[in-house]
Length: 159
Image (cartoon, rainbow, N blue to C red):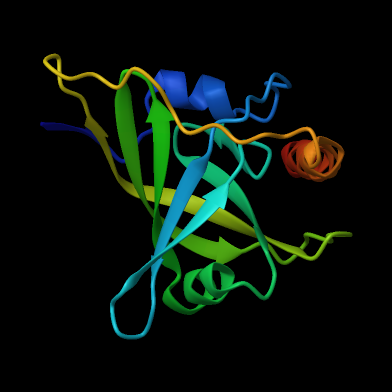
C-alpha cells in the first residue's frame, strides 16, 4: 500500500541523494518517461547522476541524445523510482533544463521539483534486496560527473 509524503522527499531520500553525501552507492535509480503515444520508457541512472539540495529539489544529469532525455525534455515530467529498502519511493517530478550547466560528457542537467512523493512498503513482503550495478568500469566517469554537479550545486548556493 502506498503512503503519500506530499511534495517533499523523506529524510532518508534526502540523506541518500544530498550533494554533500560523497558516499554514493551503486544502487540503480529508475527514471520513467513517456513517449508521444503514452508508452513508458525506463532509464537506469546512478546516484552519481541524481542529487538533491533539499526535500523539494533534485537535479538529474541525463545523457544527451538518449530517448529518455528526449522524452524528459519534451514532456517536462517523469517519475523517479528509488530503492529504499525495505520500501520503494516514487517521485513524480516536473523538470526544467538548467541553462548554466556545462557538461564535458554530454549530459543535460535538469532541475526537478516533486509534484508527489509516494512510498510503497509491505510489512508482509518487504524488499530485501535491490538492483545494483557493477561500477568498476564506470566509477571514474560517474565520479567525475558527480564532482562537476557538486561544484555546480555549490556555485548555485553561493550566488
